[in-house]
Length: 276
Image (cartoon, rainbow, N blue to C red):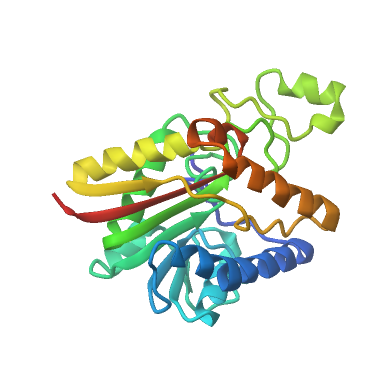
C-alpha cells in the first residue's frame, strides 16, 4: 500500500548523503556527456534531439546531455529533486507531465535504475500486489511522450542474473538464511522468485509490445551490446572495474537467448513507428 511519502515507488523523503550525491553526479555527467551521445548515435539520434529522462534523480544525466548539445529534460517525483543540479528537472510523474504538456513529444524517453522500483511500497524492493499494472502504466506514459520514430530506453539490473550489483541485499525466500551463513553472498538473488523486484529484457519487451499493440503502433525492439555503456562509478578499484568491463564485453558475444542470463544489467531499446 502506498503511503503519503511513497507513491508508486517514488519516495519523496529520500535524500542522498554527500558521498552518494557526489557519486551520482560524477557518474551521471559521464553517462550523459560521454557515453550516451555515442550510444544514441548508433540509433540515428541527432545532437539537437529532445530527450526526457524519467526518474532522473539529481538530473546529472540531463545536465551531461545538455552540455553535449541535446535538448534534455528530466522528471523526478522522489526526494532527490531537492538536490537537482539542473533547472530542467521537474518534480512530477510522467502522468502529471502529460497532463500539463499534452502536446510535447520527445525523440528519446529513457530511464536508468528506475523501473525496478516502480510499483514498490517502500521505494526500494517490496513489491505491491498490483506492481505489474503500475509498471505497465509507467511504460504506457513513457511511450505516450514519444514522437513517431522515437526511442524508448530502459536500463536497470538484470533479474535473470543471479547477483544484484546495484542495490542492497534483498531478503526473500531462502536468501536470508543463505546470506547469514555466507555473508559474501550478500548480493545474491533468486532470479525467478516472485518477490524479485528487478526486470529482465523479456519482461520489459512483453509490456512494451502489448502497449504498442493497444496503441496501434509499430515497434522494433533491440538487444544492444553493453560494452562501455555501464559507467561503474561506484567501483573505486580500477582493476575490478576493468575486469567488469571485460566481462561485459564477453557477455556481449553471446546471442540474446544466452546473453540475457549473463549480462549484469538489462538494456532495452525500442523504436516506435507511425500508427498502423
